[in-house]
Length: 209
Image 1 (cartoon, rainbow, N blue to C red):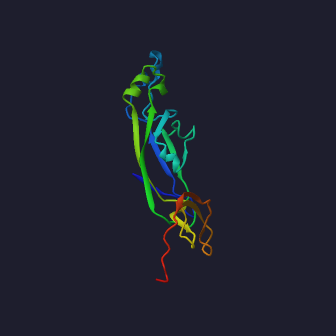
Image 2: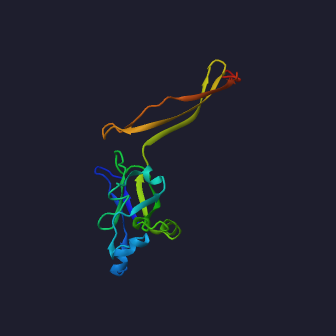
Image 3: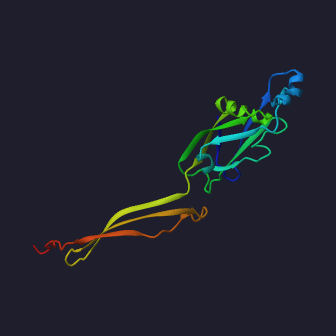
């Protein structure tokens, strides 16, 4: 499993998922050179270039950074038979490392369309039923941001003469921004409130008795 953390002052470490498509068997030269006569091409032993790759991953990966999959280096294998998908994690905002630490994990599947690369029309079925795949696992660590201050309370506004008034339910969520070590966190948000029914009047305590 590959693990990384969001970036701080510097960008976070990138994840490189590499897969190799390689012909392991050495076929006779006549098969390699003359296979096209049967409508099929057979590769030589070694890395296979220009194999179309299908990368499968969940949406949570792009929620935490940028997925880079270029046509020449990721969607197809290069001359070395390797295709590479790159993930660049997000950066945290200062103050770095503050807040609860969380992580998300998942998997990436690289599927190589190895038969259709060699004009094997019937191979489309086989490469789906018996795919050549590589599976990678990852974990992304980060501190929960941005920060919020949540206020939820009840306030009574009473008339001191007869102890009558209103009851308010007050709440708000204030997004906080770090303004520097001398300022700390700051933020503003509208105050939401619900006014309940009139309260009272209530009996006034007798202070002369």
